[in-house]
Image 1: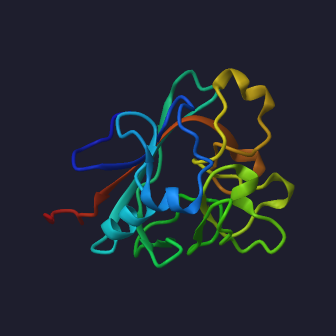
Image 2: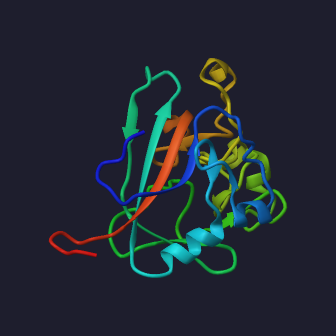
Length: 193
C-alpha cells in the first residue's frame, strides 16, 4: 500500500494471516513479526515515538468483497501514553477509531484494561487493541489486530476479529483482509519539522 508523501513510520501491517496477532501483553509491548511482512512495531516504541510533538495516523484498509480497492482513511493527531498505552486524541480532528470514546487503554487476553466489567474484549476478538468496552454480544466492532480470515472465508464473518467499523455500528462494520497503519510527524501547513 502506498502512502502519500514521505516520512511515514509503519507500525502495523497485515495481509495474509502469516503472523498470529493473538499475543500477550509483553509481545505487544515489545513488538513481533517481520518488518518486511506482517508485524506490530511495539507499544513501547509507539509511546516513545509519540511522546514528543504531534503525529498523524494514516490507516489503509482493503475490505473483503471490494475488488482490491484500497480505502485511504483518517489522518489525525495520535499519541500513546502511560503504562497501559492509552490512546488519546490530539488537539485537532476526530478519532478514526470508532470502537470507543477516547482515551482508551490497550488490552490483550492476559491484561484486560477495557472498561467492560463482564468481558475481556481483547480475548473475545483474539487480538490486542485499544478498548473501552465490548459492543453487546458482537464484541469489538473494530480491531485491526483481531483474528485473520482470508477473503474467501468471509461467509463466516460475524463482526469479530480483523474488522473495521466506520461509526461504531454493526451496519457499517466490514471484514478487513489487508491493513497498514503508519505515523508521520504532524506539520501545520507552511511549517517545517
